Image 1: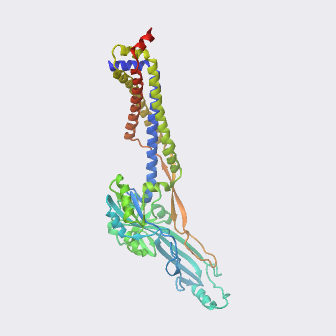
Image 2: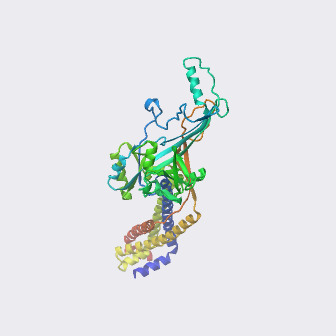
Image 3: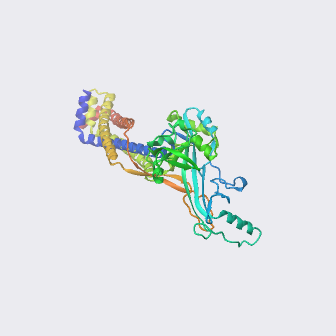
Length: 495
C-alpha cells in the first residue's frame, strides 16, 4: 500500500520530481568532480615534491643554515672557498701558466650536521626508516694565466717602492692577461645500502646499475641521464670528481617527471672522505610508520634536534609555483565553496518544492487524516517521496560526475610547476688582471604535468548520503506541515 501510493504520487508529479532530482544531480556531480580534480592536483603536487626528496620520504631534516660570515684567518665563510694558486702551481710554457684545480664542497647556502643526528632520528617513535645524504658541488677551475713566478717576482720588486713595475708577459694573448672558466656540477652522497627511501627512490636505471652495498668506499659514480648526455659520458667511462677518477657504473633518470636530485651520485662514505666532511651529512630522509604519525614524528624530531629544520611534503607545497599552484589554490577556495553553495541550494529547492506541494495537497492530506491516517504515517509518506526524488538525483549526479571525470582524464589538461633551486658557479672568463670568485645563481626547474583526476568511492558514497539526507530532512519538514492539517479543512475545501 505504502509503495503503491508512493509510486502513484511521484508519477503524478513528474515535473516537480524532475526539478528536485536535477538540482540534487547537479550538486552531487559538482561535489564529486571538484573532489576528484582536487585529488588530481594534490597528486601532481606530490609528484613534484617527490622529485626533490624521493617517493618514500615523508619528512626531511636538514641543518638550519647559518648566516655567511668570516671564516678562520680571514677566509670567507658561508660558501665555497676562493681558488688560491701558488707560484709553483700549474705548467708554464712560453710565459703562460695553465692551471686546473677542482674543489668538492657542501652546496653553498647549506650547512652540514653530524651524522650522529641520523641515529637520534632513527630512535624517534613511529620512524620506520631513515637515511642520510651529503649534497656537494664539484667546482673546477681551468684556465691560462701569466707566468706566476714572474708575477711573484714583480710583486717582490715593487714591495715598498714604485708600484709601476714591469708588467708580466705571457697569458693567452701575450699581454699579461688571463682566460679561464669555472665549471660546476652537483654531487650527492648516498648510503648504497639504504636506497628504499630518499632521493634514490625517485630514480630509474636506464643503463648499467644503481649503487649497491658493495660500493661503500669505492670510487664509482652513477650519472643523471641529462648530465651524461651533455658531457657525452656513458657506462664504463670515467668522470673526475675533485681530481679523482670515478668509474661510471650506471645512468639514471627521474621517475617523477622533474629533474633528478643531482647530476652525479656516489657512495656516502666516499663523498665524506673526498670532501673532507668526515661523519657529516646534509639532510636526513625519514619515513613514518603511517601518515597519521607524521605530525608526531615531526614534533619529536624538532624537540630532539632543535637546531635543525624539519619539513614535510605539506610544508614544501608552498614552494611549488606555476599553473599547478594557481589552479590548486583556486580549486581549494572557489571550487569548494561553489560545491557547498550548490549542495545547499539543492537542499533548499527540495524543501521549498516539498512544502509548496504540501500546500497544494491540503484536500488530499485532510481526507487521509479523516479516514484514519496518523500524523506519523503522513510524515513518512511525504519524506519517502522527497527521499526517492533525492535518490534519483544522486544516481543521476554520480553518472554525470563519472562522465565528467572521464572527459577530464581523456583531455589530460597540462599543468606547469616550478620549483626553486640553487645552482653552483657557472662558466666565467677573466680578462687582464681579472680575479675569480664563486658565483651562485638562483635557478628554477620547470615541469609539465598531465592532470589525472581519480574517482574516490568514498566521496561518491558521501555525496549520495548527503543527497539522501537532504531529501529526508526536506521531506520530514513538509510532512510535519502536512500532519498539522485537520480533517475539517479538507471538508471545507470539498464543499
